[in-house]
Image 1: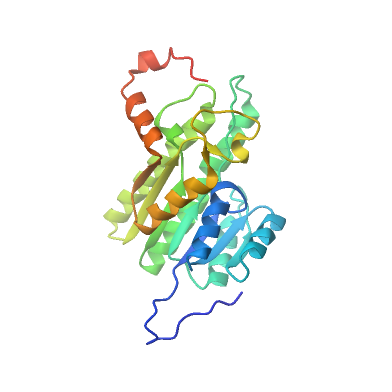
Image 2: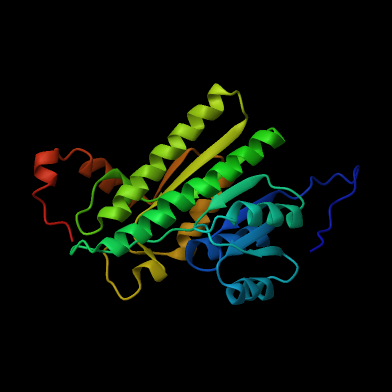
Length: 254
């Protein structure tokens, strides 16, 4: 895929380049469309080729695409291929993730969640970190969740893996400082979002994906470090962090 780059001396800065993993639906798709309409060069990746094609048709000539599964060992190679198609990468955004309510604690859903949200998360963020390290800088962002701030009994693996992601990004940010690397980090923590992840379930304060995507885009453009979307969820997190463990364990959170 060819992109038109302004010639030197034209007085126009080259378009920024963002790679979005998990861009075939939900927040990732909405963010990809927003960045493309803002004039960014956008590389999009996901598991389903037909959904990637739909994105290409929505904004012609705006995207470079790559089929990629974060749980597959070849995902970093596929990421590298997408970066080459795009002509480089300034921002990396990881949106891929799964989760489910599992109060019966069946092991398979828990393990699938851990495979995507931990193994896949490590695979892709380390690939992006090392790319930016070799390049001499960049911006690494990921969608985590407010669920990482408390252990939710109805979704043990989901809340635990989101806590892992929060902590992993903190560790990478510290590592970048230790190694004097100009790498920025953004941890995006939405609450309940109307995506396929919540399909068929009703949750309070559910937000539309396009609204979350708009806030996400602003956070990346401003290089914000941690973003909880929105005010209602910021207040919720503030107050539930004040709840002592002994009381939290007795609350019937559903």
